[in-house]
Length: 99
Image 1: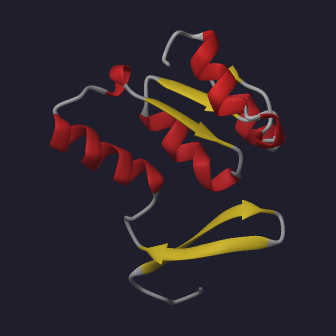
Image 2: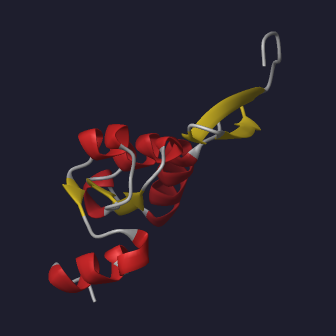
């Protein structure tokens, strides 16, 4: 991507990346949605398991890493739930009275 304008790489696994518009990304998407619905970041929760989810987890009040997340994702998360295979989002929501 050297000398490429208008695009950036975001890695989500050590062997896979996404090429997205510069200034794009999940964090910016979260900010736009929160702004549109007049929510503050403290009112939002996000779940992620890949490196490309870090900016999203940092953009919300509660960033939750999946049990199968990479170590760098778990390190920045506010909480960790069960893995995707164990229906982690569902159980997290049940345990925290969100459902």
